[in-house]
Length: 390
Image (cartoon, rainbow, N blue to C red; front, side, top):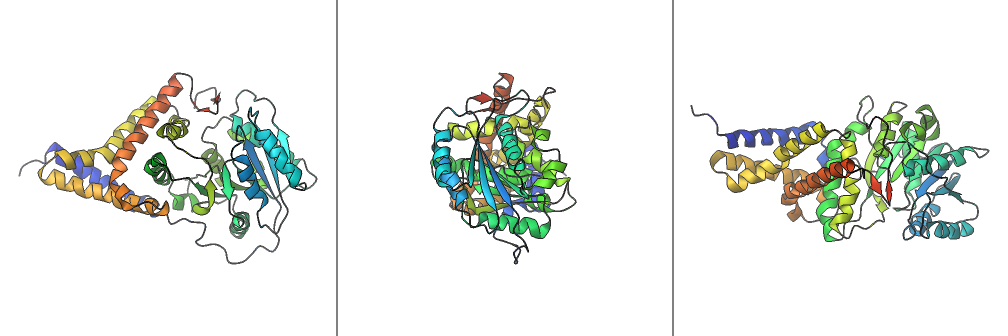
């Protein structure tokens, strides 16, 4: 009996890897964890008080739309908004103050203090907002941690609180739907969500008793008492991937929930590929814990999982080629629900390997920027790293 060729062995390994991914990681690819599914039917007996905390740095073009959507929330309980201006040098502060003048006391503006050592700018702004919320005579039951580039449908907060109260959750987070109109957005945004779900299967995140924890920083409803027990925002003050770091700490305090949504939208545009590269490169190497060994392993695994099959399908022959073609089709099958969620045609599905190669380049760029001392660069600021580099 003839031994299998090296190409056949690689093709079989890749096929086995994708069968394992489709069947063994919480069926992440189905995009089934959604805020419009399994919503508790009844309202809570009492609508708890909520304060939204919005860190803002150089968001003059978007903050009026974002804050306006928060102020229009159809929420029966007490609800107010705190904006922390993170030393903006554009018109962010003026735009926020103009809205505050019309918001009849529901919008408070905090001018952020200078960034201390050991903190990322966003988390320093958030902790100042949380402190202001807790300094009131009646601290809120929940904090809505959100961003200044996020827009909300009017019923979102009501749904978040209903889910949190019904499940006794420490955290409810919605993955804001990113804009997907320009060519770079259509080419790269759905894959970003696909890869995130692969890394953090939402079913595993939402399952009690599992260690998998993740959140989407644009929309996080946090139970204030659970945040205090977890050590507060200061416990993750140096984290570049702050949403997942916070989720990990909060899941030790109680169950959490993460899902996709159509009703929370990112207002930020990505007209050029370089815009998405900067977004990814900011934190990709942090995801690998700044380890060159993990980077090398990631390159090898991504090459095997995404690039080997199309290369063998295009340049191979015999059994290896047919196995590779089948694997490539499996990739497209797995990618299709995410494409459908973003309203794109299935013709994008076969492009997943090429898209993965682009993200691999972005990850390598993230490591290069870190080596140059520009890791975590965002809005003109190189974010702090922990002393031990982890």
